[in-house]
Image (tube, rainbow, N blue to C red; front, top):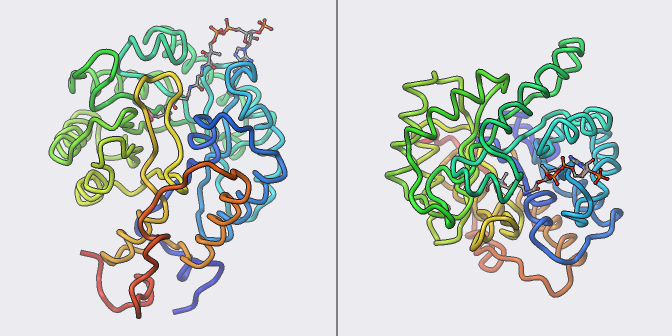
Length: 325
Ligand SMILES: CC(C)(COP(=O)([O-])OP(=O)([O-])OC[C@H]1O[C@@H](n2cnc3c(N)ncnc32)[C@H](O)[C@@H]1OP(=O)([O-])[O-])[C@@H](O)C(=O)NCCC(=O)NCCSC(=O)C[C@@](C)(O)CC(=O)[O-]
């Protein structure tokens, strides 16, 4: 098999969307210098990650760590083959993201309205109004210049502020996000409450109600150690995009108790070991981790694979004859 830039024939079975430069950095007090961010993003892309969430268009007073997002987007869109994603909390953020040239916008809608008020200072109705405004903005562009718009349903599996979250509400709000103009929705376990049985059940409910194309991606946190078990459940159900963060850094600063994302390095190993192609090259991924470690001295980076290393003789999934399970 030919292997170019960490991708085996350019094909992947499961796409890993790297959210470290956004979700990871938003929860760390240190502001990473812009040039370090660029080096890190370039290293992540060179490892074969095809989608990277590089920042958020939020008021710099709120998250100074991401104040350079416009410059970072302008840099990242110059990296060939990379889909440059950003988080936008409202129409103003979407307009700034368009001006910078982002390829994908994600707006969070928290199923827990208490969390929505903490995070975006908006009710469900107000967030949906922002989505309609963003849709109108995008529809004014020629079709080939329209970024993809994803509605990310936060606190889908429970919330530290409200406790259990209604699965019917997840489905209802997902439908409302699509009606308001999102191209697709994603499920997010903001505070790491989910378990594999629940992940399977919620995915089936969403797909049954809203159609198979409504949702392809999931965003999981490892707060209670369920992250990779939840990935396995999601992937076996048919999810094809999984968010992860290098070194497991991250967490929503406006959700009490939220902590790190699932670790990209461990996720790549899990998927490749099972026979799914991710397109990611381990050596280059570990080089990207070294760039991150140097840029954030003293910050803990998590992950088992970087500590233990690859098993002897391990091959990328695409280099083996084995079919994905
Ligand atoms: C939505 C707001 C802006 C409302 O905040 P607000 O204070 O209600 O905003 P406002 O509309 O009243 O405006 C206040 C000021 O901010 C400005 N402003 C207004 N919007 C913007 C913007 N986009 N960019 C830059 N500036 C902006 C606006 O122009 C004004 O400026 P002033 O007149 O005072 O000079 C705020 O609450 C916000 O940005 N929240 C985002 C918080 C956030 O980033 N949370 C973390 C991401 S979500 C997450 O982590 C979960 C997720 C996605 O990872 C998935 C999961 O795990 O669940």
